[in-house]
Image (tube, rainbow, N blue to C red):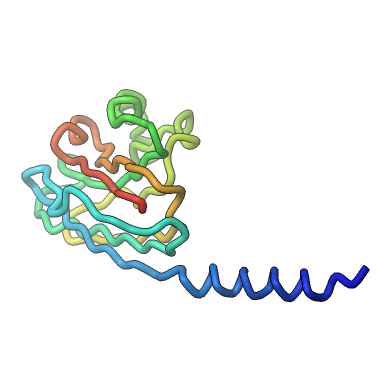
Length: 146
């Protein structure tokens, strides 16, 4: 059996799929009033997503540190917030919850920034939060994947 046509078709489809994926860059700011400047952003499944968090605040990291944690599909912010409050040693990213987190920045002090890069998952709505204790109630939003 000649498998060349099948191999060629597979290569063409793979090339078409990878050619359609884009790199999407998103910039989000956090501040001393516990707010993100964006409450949502949209991407397409398969895109390479680069999210940069900029902490534009002035208060010290120990009192007003911020991160950006993108949760797995179906995970509510409150599920992460409790365990995160006790995870100071790991910048409020609880090891027991790693399977519920798609990506996260490091914890940022004033005037610091960090960029995370990941592939957009399947279509759906995904929450993002700051996991510093008490911040998730005001610092949250959604990533919509089409």
